[in-house]
Length: 339
Image (cartoon, rainbow, N blue to C red; front, side, top):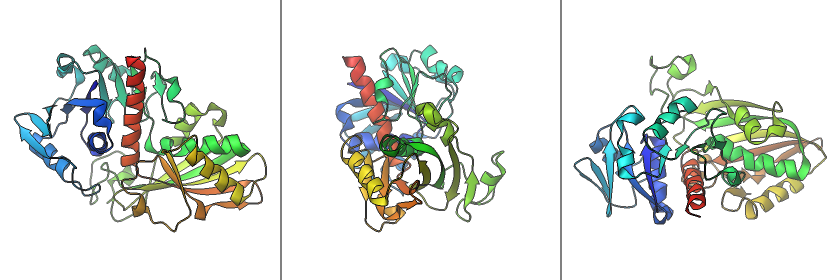
């Protein structure tokens, strides 16, 4: 059983822990440590109660500096730098880096220097990481000698299965994406001085706010044949969770709406079973809250214009879906090591 630690116990860190217990991953992983700058009573409270995902499915208590979940005892630390942690003494096999603060290999190397053998990052990272993985697409790229791996981003995990399917079915010439993303905790509730990005100083609940996105870099890293061919924009909207990508692609051959929907539906039942969904029902975003899949295509919104311009609407739970993919990548990596 893999002994893991979680660094950063915010939205993704807590979702990873919850998913581990809710979805049967506890049979494969034992969380032995969490590092979070908050106090342990607040950590316990935010584990037990969550506005977005509801109550934690198991009892959670505090004993000293440990979170007690059922029969599991998780030691909690409050350190800024990895070399201040003694996780090597806990025989930690892998750290799930969920703070978003270690995108550069030089900084991430501090974990390895502190005795941690493997680091899985919860965000897109620099190109010199050992691998960037979208589970279901390229997990076979992970090797046993890898030490620092990125699980990409929630938007990349949403989009790559679709681009892969469209590229195989009809070819992709070029396209553009618009990510409509729920508010995040780097935004203030009211206007506030807290970031150099002036748009992100504005109240999250009062506006639709354009933000920068690195999605096009993620696409080209995973599908280099599309480098420079997909433009990406993003806005934040005043919802707590669940996001959507509005995708427009020009295909290399003529297609129909029914053909595109059929190709995506087949991918959802074959190659991307359990990772991609397809629906023809009249949904709103809240319907996909706590949905573990990477993407759900809304077939009612599919359009084909002039034979080769394809427009799709692609839902995803930006917290829960991504947390489950992190654990999928971690399990795949662990299985390689154990064999």
